[in-house]
Length: 286
Image 1 (tube, rainbow, N blue to C red):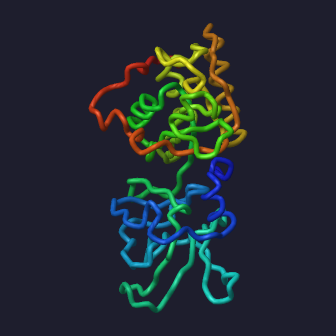
Image 2 (cartoon, helix red, strand yellow):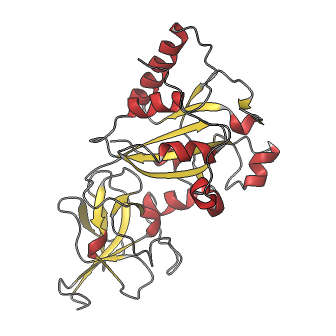
Image 3 (cartoon, one colour):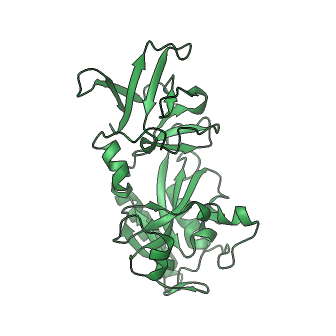
């Protein structure tokens, strides 16, 4: 299990850790209809299948059944409601209500969107996460989406000091952020080591000032690790390439807050129907 607490923006922490509630009708998943699975945003455990989601009119995602054994219930601090939390990491999800007659199961898990992540996979049981920086995030996402076992990608910004940076902030160099990709994957189908090797193979890890024609701090090569296992794996692969005679410029840094980039950046090359201009695949590991 990887706890993603250090990469969650303040709003997410306020809800998941401090048990706040997002405003109704504002969450990303309130009107979300896609088939798949809703995960715990803090630890990646699969909590709800999309087929159990229904429109309750309350303004928050509603489910009439959880995946068995994944959701715990506790008396709420208000003494009236029943709080629901992730059974593994105990992150706050919302509340559960019975007896409303809204579905045949007569049960409503009222969940904050910020407590959830979504993947378009209807059978996944658990997920893990990785964050990489390898130049322009459009091209990095283009390649990672090709991998079997990668369930979700998001491009964004990490490593800086300004809260909720815009693309303009990052491009100006004043926020200290790098263009990164967040990769959610099924560890039963693909390993972190496979992802990290692929990272080294889809960009030029010896370039020190950017990637291809894109020059600047935001385009540097970085592996952001969540735990000691990811750190050791990244260091091992970097050392292996250096033994091959490559002078690897990739930095290996602890993960910090991930800020999702503007919507027009997500799946950019799929939207415009083109291919990356500064990324390509080169096999580097035997």
